[in-house]
Length: 324
Image (cartoon, rainbow, N blue to C red; front, top):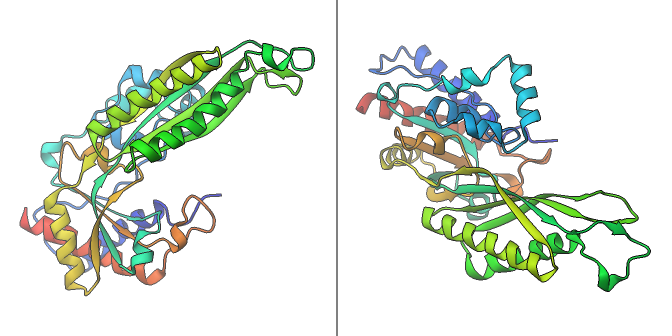
């Protein structure tokens, strides 16, 4: 139920870049490699492949992955991988000159502006938590409304309060509760526990830390309001990552040489480049997404934009390779 362009476009464009360089007989001072990372989205861990080659994974972190331990173990088994292999996959970044990626925007900004190429200035940081409100399960028919310690009330109130707080106090940020479950989970039992999957994003490290503190404090206050206790368990963290000025300049020069309009913009989605940004020059470009839709079968980008952006990627890669 996903889209055809998210991720796949970048891999195909990278393959075409390498093929074009080979067909043209270009002798570059560096090797061009194509890499297709796994689990960028976070079904298992988030930025899994890129974090592995960056040496950012830890044994402790793999014990409590974002998608759950059982899902990670099953995924590794399907792929024939091991935790030891992940933890030993670090590359020598002294031998890596840079990392470039083409992606769909997954938002409406470029399409609304009529701009063909978005040059990413930075990638947002993303933190996630598992929140659990603890109340008291009881009979839903015989317990008076004013005598309940209902965990679902805390969860519901927090979702609304978090939205209002971010809109009011953190306008450059976003917050999302993507999962909510009640236990025991029956029609006739007052929820004794409510579990939420919380994620929030900011382009600035200090603001991301402040947002985390504010959201956890808000969750605690909401719990107290309804007589509930709260447990909060960190489920993942990706730091904000500015893109390389050198890579941005190479993309801008490539777009201009091809007569394509371009603009700088931050990425509100996480990408593998943020794992690599502390170690090498990283750059990304976006192309317009029709109606800003992604993670959906309706996801679409014009084929002309796909072709033009692949040429921008090719020219920028050759530029950076030739100029060190």
